[in-house]
Amino acid sequence: MLSINQEKLIRSLSTKKGREKNGLCLVEGEKVIKTAGDAIEYTFTNKDTSDFDKLVTTETPQNIAAVASIPKLTLDDIMSNKIIVVLDGVQDPGNVGSILRLCLGFNASLILIDSADVTNPKVVRSSVGAMFHVPWMHVSAKESSKLIKSLDMPIYRLEKKKDAIDIKKAKLKKPLILIAGSEGGGIQSKIKGESIYINHNDKLESLNVGHSIAIALHALL
Figure 1: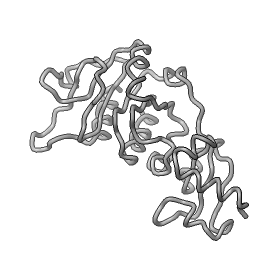
Figure 2 (figure 1 turned 60 degrees about the vertical axis):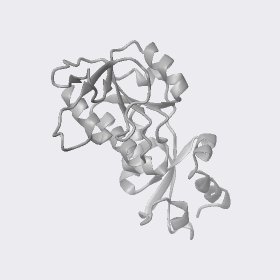
Figure 3 (figure 1 turned 120 degrees about the horizontal axis):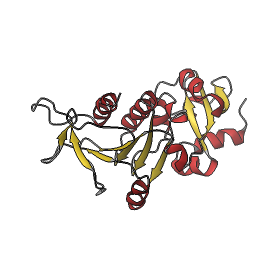
Figure 4 (figure 1 turned 90 degrees about the horizontal axis):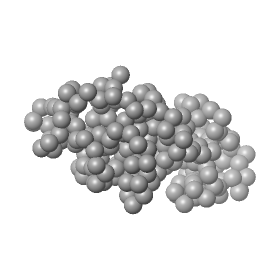
């Protein structure tokens, strides 16, 4: 059975402040727990507490959840991959989770500028635990320019604008940094780089950020 203190801790993990204070996050479902591996501190089910449905975040709770340690990552970890994806203002947890899976699949690191918190239970769930294996870090818009320039890598901005180059003609080579913004807002950062775009039917106003990154990462194979 969960103790009163454990239940109190688990409730606190629904907030960013609580997760940062404790260095822990909530993981839900057998598949995600399995992917999290050694990061798992302990698991619990509805047999361990009468408040199971209130402790987890899904509307239709799975049978098991867990408390896991948030990975402690450094800039060296980020630079361990030859592709660094930068998300600028991507607030949708589902998109961030999907992009974490893409980063895992294509050996990329992830830097998030004013984007959804990777430790958010919705992001953890939609990433299917990829956030435990992908090097990632959050930075503020103010800090981002200096940090990204310090990486000393070619920078490409995924955006459809007048002087952008078709990704098929861009001849991308690793290592590189790929910046993408939200579908609605685009890239807000003024970080300089070569603009590239993915050509598509004009009847479609824009591609989802996750779809765009998937196409771009595949182009780098």
